[in-house]
Length: 141
Image (cartoon, rainbow, N blue to C red; front, side):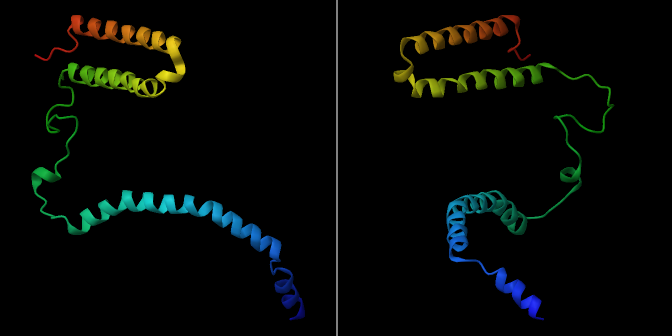
């Protein structure tokens, strides 16, 4: 019994380790709060919707739905690729336009070189857009 008491007495933290633990807790508490608030914002609406939302299932709602096509037809049916092409082009041009925001914020710091570089980038973007337009990739018949 004496050995067990000595073990717990030896494990008692001294003042230095308690201060160190407080500093660590103080540094990680905002991170922990950020994670908890993020989980609450992400999971909270899902749980509230599940608890408070109406549940009226029918055959139409329970049927599988995929890519805008009826799932009961032949799996080898032809589909229009232009839908996916327009979607990919939208994502491509949207991501390229996203480069304009940091450029606009830092235009004073990057000077003339940054301005000319962005104009070259925008010229390439416009040439690509005109090319896709002329090829008919944006036409929907």
